[in-house]
Image (cartoon, rainbow, N blue to C red; front, side, top):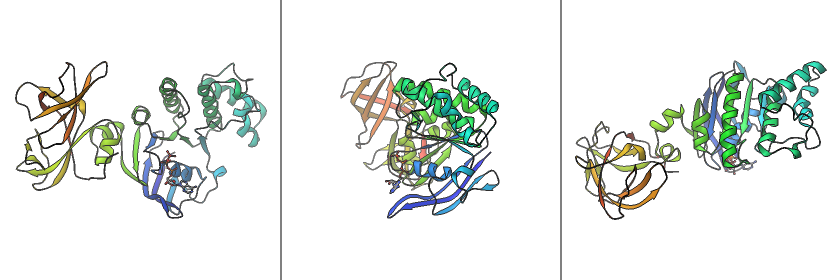
Length: 344
Ligand code: ATP
């Protein structure tokens, strides 16, 4: 079931939570809404679920306009950050709850609960209560409960935020596996860029109530279209200047010639370079910089250098570098960004 959102807006009194959001999630894909606190991602998810009413715009599940359809008729599954399990019920009863409300036959409920618990790896824990399970297991129960209803759409609001770092990585892979196995269309809210890059078919990066860019994880990382997206997803150096005779004229009067087009003459641009694409070179450097600091990160080192005009760049390398030394650098890849939406 594909999801199409057009022009969705929402304000809470004077606070504009969503300006005008467009988003399309093709059937069977997982889309993440990625952004920092307050960007509107939870509000958008809650509007899609029906917990919140939009002020304007349309939401379609397939051909069906659901903007005025109440939550219980939308056929969605929702997974909350806080799990929201009933503490007095067993695992089995929690998963069966929605099915019982729908008055499904008993043996069908038993089968669906067993299937759901097998999918999330909790077979054998049917009689436990939520309090006897770890956080990760509780979230698995919540996921099984949402999926047991065979929803058209699965919505997840920061489902892994309460788990420790290692378990988060494990669980996000599990969620992705289950989403792919069931082929369900899913929307996943997170502020964690690694999570978004790893599990998504589509990432929508949100900023100030707008979707700034929608694309595959590769497009978002490799071809950011705004300075905000470039800086929010991964580490980046943003060199600011004006295109002059095919080179980047920095404010200081220094020029950097890049190996590729920078855009129209006279245009103000940012050149975004990922640390792994900025190479330390002995000769034929595009520019030089003075090393400000270096940090050892195990598999590599990451250093920051200051260019003569005062702008900073971050690059990865292997051998140790002395603070204050001058280094030659060349960008193996870069992206030219015309739209300055600030930095994250
Ligand atoms: P977080 O990750 O912190 O949950 P978010 O990106 O999900 O952030 P939202 O919760 O969607 O952001 O909030 C967007 C904006 O709308 C914020 O400025 C928030 O304070 C405001 N807001 C959200 N819900 C309400 C509400 N019920 N009443 C008033 N303001 C609200």
